[in-house]
Length: 491
Ligand code: NAD
Image (tube, rainbow, N blue to C red; front, top):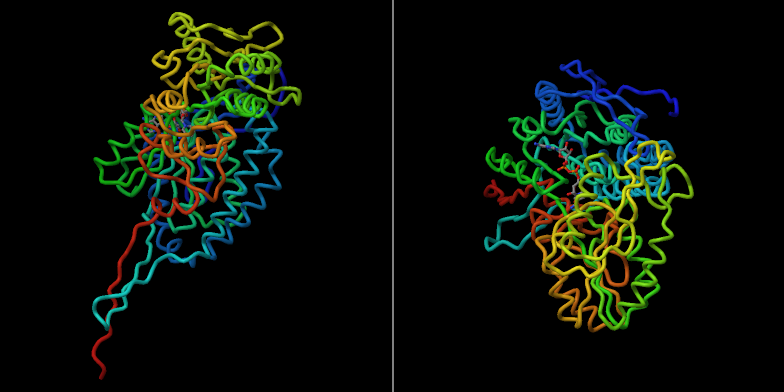
C-alpha cells in the first residue's frame, strides 16, 4: 500500500471551508487499489444544504448586478489556473476515478477550454430587438438569470461536467450549489479551489459534499433553489425531475446512453476499428457517450471482427498512473459487479464471447476493480446486452444485411445520446445523420467527444430534451424578459 497524505475535504459555503454539521466523514478510495484512501470528505446533511442555499441566495443580487464581462474575467482567470494546475488535478482524478492520467489530463484541459468559452460568452449579445406594430414602441428582449441553481454531477467526468454546468450558470448571473458524486469529491474540490483563487465572491459558488441519497432532496427542494441541472443515471434523474417540477423549479437532465457505431460495407476498416476501440474501451467504457454496440454489415463483418479482436486482445489493463496502461479499473465494486452481471446475462442469452469476460484479480492487482475488455459476437438487437446501459468495457457486435436494417437497429433502443457511422459514401452518411434518433451524430469518428462551443445532449430517454454547452446553455440558465418600451408624450 502506498503512503500518501490524506486530505480532509470540507464543504465550501459562503466563501469558507466548513465541516459538516454531521461531524461524519466519508472515504474516497482508489479503484485501482481500494485499500488506499485518497481523501476523506464531509457527509453533509440537509442543514449544510440549507446554509449553502442561504449563502447562494444572499450572494445573488450583487452577482446578478455585476456586468457580465466582469464575471467573465473571473472565468478567464480560472481557466488559466486550471491549466497551470492540470497535472495535479489529473492525478487526483486518476486516483479517485481510475481513468488513465493521459485521459484525465485531457479532460482537465477540456475543462479549462469550457471555462474559457463561457468567459467569452460574457461579451455576447443577451437579447434581440424586434419591429413593433406600434410606431412608438421599442420592443426588445433581455435575459435574466434563474437565481440559485443546483448542479448535481456524476463521477465519470468529474472536471468536464461540473465545469460545463458551473461556467454557464455563473456567467449568466446565477449563483450555484454544486453536489459532486461521492466517488469523486477531490477533483470537484480542486475545481472549486480554482474558482475561489480566481476571485469568485463569497457565496456565489458553494460546494456540498456527501451522499445524494441523504442531501439530494434538500438540494433540489430548497425554497431558494430555482433550477436544477443533473447529469447521472435515469433512475435518479427521474426522481430529481419529479421533485423539481413538483416544487415549480426548472430542471434539466442528461442521462444514459446505448450508443451505436455503424460500419457500412465501404468503410475504411482500419479507421473504423481504431475508433470503435477508443469509443468502447477508453475510460473503461464508463462514458455516457461510449460505444456499446457495433453494428456491422455482413460483407465486411469477418474482416472487421478479426482486426478489432486483435486490437482488443492487445489492450493493457492497469493502474491509470502507469503510462503503459490503456484501460484503468472500473470506478467501484458496484460498477464491477454490474459489468460482470451483464457479461453473464450476455452468455446466458446466447451471445458468443470473443474476448475478455472476466475480472482481473490476480495478486499484483491489489484488489483493484479490473475487468478484461470484453467483446461479444452474435448479439441480436433485442438481447439485454444490446438494450441496457452497462457502463463498462463490454462491446456487443451485431451483424446486419442492409443499410436500412443498420439504421433500424441503431435506433431500436430507448436511448438516443450519440451515434456514429463509418462510410465513404456521402449520400448514405447524410441519410444516416437524418434518420438517427440521437442528439449527437458522428461520421467517421467514434461516439464520444464533446467540444464546448456546440450543444451537447440526447434524444429519447437520454435527456430531458434540453441541451448543455455552446449557445444552447443560455436557454437553461436564463429566462427571457420581453420589454415594450414606450416614451411618454413629448412635454
Ligand atoms: P447517479 O445517478 O448514481 O449519480 C449522479 C449524481 O446524483 C451523484 O452526484 C449522486 O450523488 C447524485 N444522487 C444520488 N441520489 C440522489 C438523489 N436521491 N437525489 C439527488 N441526487 C442524487 O449516476 P452516476 O453513477 O454518478 O453516473 C453514471 C450515469 O451517468 C450513467 O447512467 C451515465 O450514462 C450518466 N451520464 C450521463 C451523461 C450525459 O451527459 N448524458 C454524462 C455522464 C454520465
